[in-house]
Image 1 (spheres, rainbow, N blue to C red):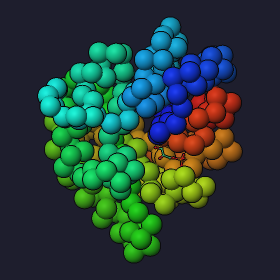
Image 2 (cartoon, helix red, strand yellow):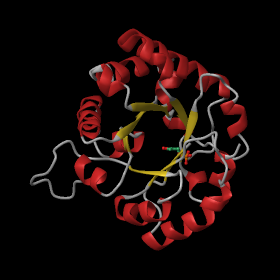
Image 3 (tube, rainbow, N blue to C red):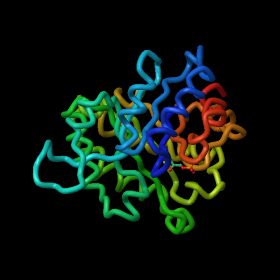
Image 4 (tube, rainbow, N blue to C red):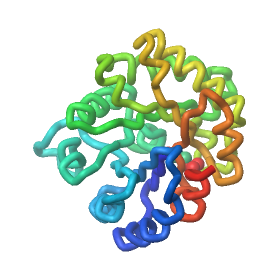
Length: 243
Ligand code: 13P
């Protein structure tokens, strides 16, 4: 169960979140929990999570290790402060910041080289779903963004299926729709990486809330959730973790 806080919270608010959240998920042994926070909140998140089972991640990285790249953050920097994860290729990065399948692949390889695990996001836009192109979009995103990984690199990624029309809209994909897309992704993974596809974790993201998480998770193909809005509040995210 991964939280994507997007561009929300200050360091003080981050510490307050963990103070409330950690006791609420005590004993939630069945889920791995990760919080992906804005860069500036990562030290506070890592300090607060220390000694707990909760892991912390960034929401993006640049592929160079260091250099004259004003405003960017590298994989080794995230690793050095104690991040375990990084999100790559979120649809908001694709829509608003020029991310492409090619840059997704570069970032993913750089993250893994730095010792991070990657939550790699794919998913179709509303117009693409309505035009019946969901599968074609997943093929293209997987082919250009994932299939170029080595088998060792592939073992370090989790894929998040996030239909863009379900993000922040309150409009969730039905469990059946999500499971069907996950099945397509697992099929693509099997074609490219063989049996390793069986252990690939595929998360669903897009308006996951405490009241719909159980029906989504009841689908065998859905291994977890990437949660935006509902991850900002400790009570609501703990209900999702403890579903
Ligand atoms: P919401 O849960 O706010 O729809 O966001 C989903 C998402 O984009 C997670 O990465």
